[in-house]
Length: 46
Image 1 (cartoon, rainbow, N blue to C red):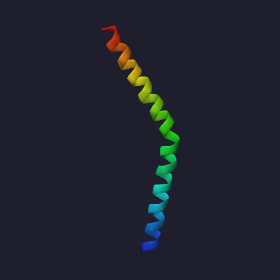
Image 2: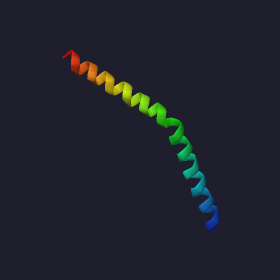
Image 3: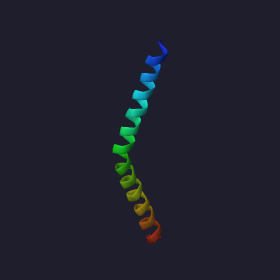
Image 4: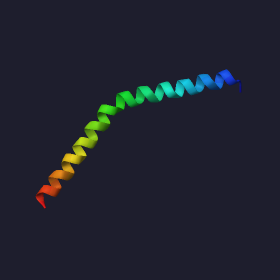
């Protein structure tokens, strides 16, 4: 496998992961926030 092909592949993977992180970050934050507030609500009830 040529070196520049490997470099291109790595660049593509990094680019994809960056886009994925940027798109999934708000969803992740919302999910964690929802779970945290749920845990707090459960702790409050006890």
